[in-house]
Image (cartoon, rainbow, N blue to C red):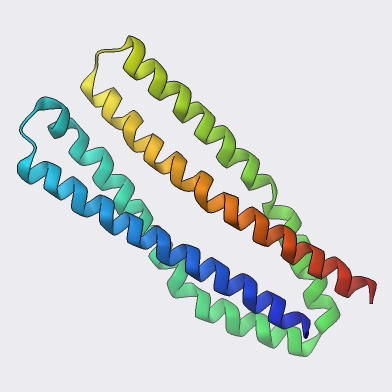
Length: 166
């Protein structure tokens, strides 16, 4: 198998995850609008904006990333054709550099979980609780995304190392 096919598999996995995140963002936007339209309790009213913001972050942020992917894919294919060894070395460094991000997302999720427990166990502030719910949505999404992304990164990194040894 040509090494670039592994890179293509990486990009396809990223695009698939992006579609899932955009879909989740759209669902959150719809849910927040339904809360705004039909929610009559103070808790519902305080939940509208945090859920809307998370939905917009997912939809707009990942949408922008996905819009740039075709250019990245074309540029990486050209770089591979120009100098395969240099491309593989650059990919190795890129994968190594973003591995640390997985630890940050787990830390962010842990802080969000603790804040939510504190918010619901000890603090009677609807806005703070609503923000914590939105952070939990964001954290759970990050953990799910990173679960698959980390696995794909490990597989890709193994392929990189294998090709560098050849």
